Length: 268
Image (cartoon, rainbow, N blue to C red; front, top):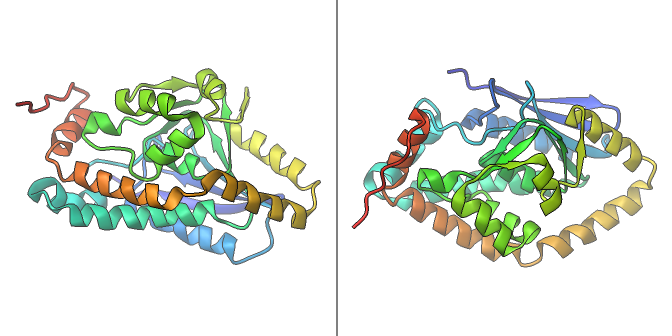
């Protein structure tokens, strides 16, 4: 398996980050580190009015790559096998730090979503300020089907965005949501019948008509209004996520996921 890559390019006033790991851009650990490096590059310049994150090949991101050759799996082995939540907690803190830095860039962050947007991929999108999607996009948080939870901000941010009932529906069942339902629920702000990246670049063109100082100050207030009190909830989510990862269920769920079979959970 190749680790994939994450690239950064300038498109007009936008810094465009592209996830590249065929077929559906599942995230390898190296890709998380590349994403973090590009976020640091954008944060260190005033050359861009917005950042756009998208995926190559007609998909946004299918989430974490859970195949055995992803170093993430090796790092989680003590949690999976020995029930030690420490390695899981450390990894979650690391990856959540990357998403926090993405979501606090000094410019608006737009997720341009085509095709699959699932698991950690959806959690990347939830860390953004705006989500624009192609009408062929689809969404899911299927971690519970693998014996885990959406622990990269998914439980907290989805509940805030959609309300607790809708978030509970999607997270506990792991069901797939199409683009129309995503728009109706408020998971995305707009749909397009073309490529989501082009819609996002048009959004940035509209943004560029507004004053940079005014948009920066408005963005600060909007983020505080939507994220106030988020930190302790994210910390609670990390503890819950680490507990789930070390519960003994993930090896059963991940194997079922990789073999496309129904998991056989151990019950009393």
